[in-house]
Image (cartoon, rainbow, N blue to C red; front, side, top):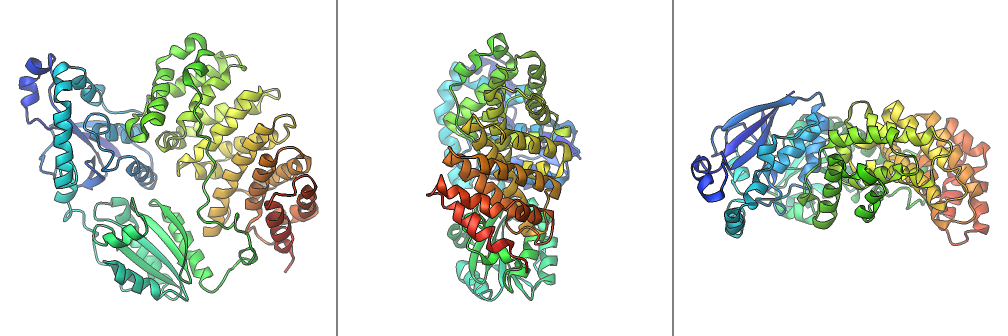
Length: 577
């Protein structure tokens, strides 16, 4: 798909005429930009909206710049765009530091590996650097706040476009469309003996519209066991408030009237798999493990483990010497510091292709004992879903795999390097785009599996085993969620290797309660709702997984997971039926 940047002049030509006299330099326009993709114009004006190109009251763009061609499938782009909506909110809009140009720069970087032209991206800072710009800043910001209060955004685009971006054709009779909390409760009340799935949509959400045909199709297919409810948040404000809906599409599921899980994003495969599972659960649990009391393993709202602590970056980078002055390193440092100090909204993505190039060079040029500094810097950046989302779609995942292989191929890898590499790999899960890449792409999955298994062999460092357990937990959590929807995404041979390595690590663990807790959670998720006939369950029986775990009560009598995993899951859950 072709990607174009639409460029508008908010000054209507006045900037070109007056800028030299007022600002002391020539400014051709007060740039407002948006991204044109696949017949729609994506713009940040309060919320992120999608409109018919050139249909706002700004008229036709001043320029239409071809940025490049993206090969990414639209469903991946839609999911990334949804993650941007969590950062580019109406409340976060700032005329100078978090505006439409920041949005188009981030969106373009993800799709094409490059941002928008620098003279546009740098325009707000150039104005603020002038005395006259600083003098006008308070007045301009007040004007923006007034416009937001009156129109919902600086340009009022989302109000202008309600008719253009309506929810489309009406839903079939099998889908209950509700407009307020009373009709919602009535629709949900009809599902006390069934399952239900609620689709929160909005008038300005193209990814939502893309799912309408599938949602309607599933409703017709499963109407006997699942109640389908659609809520337009631009009309049913009270329902959105009741369930704290902040972005669309959002889905919430219910079984026999009890709320189960919530997820955000236009994931067609997940929607289809979840509805299939809901249909099975409507008549009772389809897997014997769902009858067991496993609160930590069955929790649908479990989140991946992320390592978010930021070290003193100047001190960290001082170990690099002159390499720390590289523009790519300083750009990443500035991004991380801005994000931690002011939040994601105030942090503009750095030059990611340049940083990838620096990382590739660093792996060969920087001594092994110092390489942890660069990887730890990368770890801090990957906390941001925009950055991890970018690397999720990198060709061949060459940056991530190169780092993992640098540790996997070195039997004497320094402690600090192995630790931050494990933590870095955990932070890949900050984006919804990365987990399925790890499970489904063999080179990446193999590198991650090897890193986990080899790290469990480290008897001397508790932190290594804790981090390895956290990474295995993240992998197992994603696989369990896929298992709930349809079937495993992690090949059984990988599950067996990981289960065997973590069982051996549990056998050897005698000092770290934190490490044992993480290992038990990870093993429990690997086994939860596994096929009752297969190599994994045979392995757990052969290795006496239950006995191994219960034996740890001698050293860790207060660990509750020993009972949940050892007695409940690996005793009752391994019984042949």
